[in-house]
Length: 207
Ligand SMILES: [Zn+2]
Image 1 (cartoon, rainbow, N blue to C red):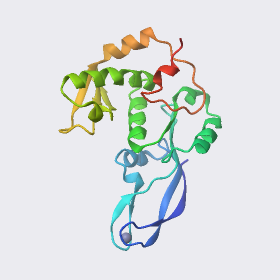
Image 2 (cartoon, helix red, strand yellow):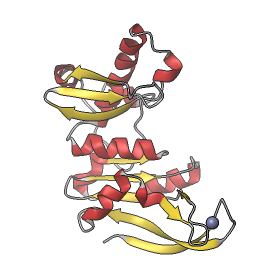
Image 3 (cartoon, rainbow, N blue to C red):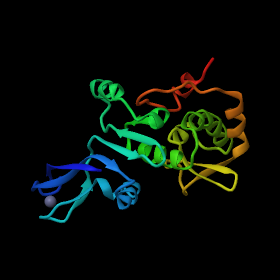
């Protein structure tokens, strides 16, 4: 079951105070429509009943996809105390190695896509620096390539997108590269919610 409560929201345009449905947890197995709403970010959209202005509302929530055995905590502000509490939560055994904490909506959407594609996010993060070095050869600046997201996995290709590079720039890498990494590395047994990004991914490998 998804759980929700109402929270007061002040319109950034007209100052009117209205009510917003805040979902403390999202269960996409029981609410299939909600999955599309999260992916389009309509889920976080609030429309002011007075002036019609709409804007994004940020709040803590946990996305549960029990069928695919993953859970993702969205923490809109990096807060050590909140993160520590989340790390203490005990998880269903099948979700142990696919429970993550993210701090942005882009990261939330990316983790959902990675896990739905049945890929391992530690390996996806390890591939990113390699992909970034490739795009620099294409003349793209390092600062523009810093924001890199897994986009999709199709026809033997893993695609990464770069929202800060113009023209919807994307890069494909052959899945063989991913499979090679999979063969060469052993990923530590993970327990509890973890933060996995390109800066720390290597720490999740067995030495
Ligand atoms: Zn308003």
